[in-house]
Length: 155
Image (cartoon, rainbow, N blue to C red):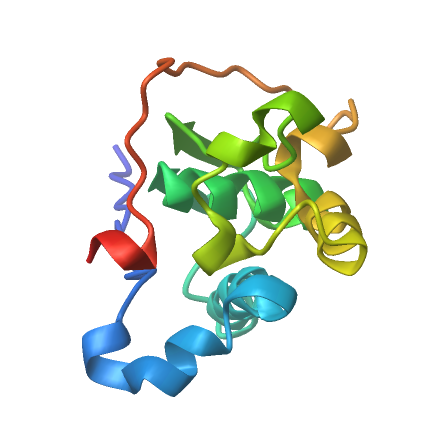
């Protein structure tokens, strides 16, 4: 009887290594540069696949809260790279209705939806506003209505 062996490779991508890489690195992933964060994550996935550490049929990603935003954006941008993506209590609706914009608490990190240029940039990657039903994406979401995502001002 042939025994097949499988190697499980775990990779933790720390989404906020500001203490190691510095404030400039962190600033290069904020506001009108936020997509750098998503592109960096995609680059890591592509590298792991290119180096044959894994394959899209075996690669999973997970993130919680603001990391869930990363998962939502990556799922919309490159669903072909992942077998599955788990976004726990994801921050996916970045564009509050106008009547709620006074209470919007993510300006320091993501930008101001009341400023036209920043509104359209947020719209370009907001997971909720960009999800499309494709054979690659079959969303199943869970969440809670009181996610206390930390902003840079909370740290």
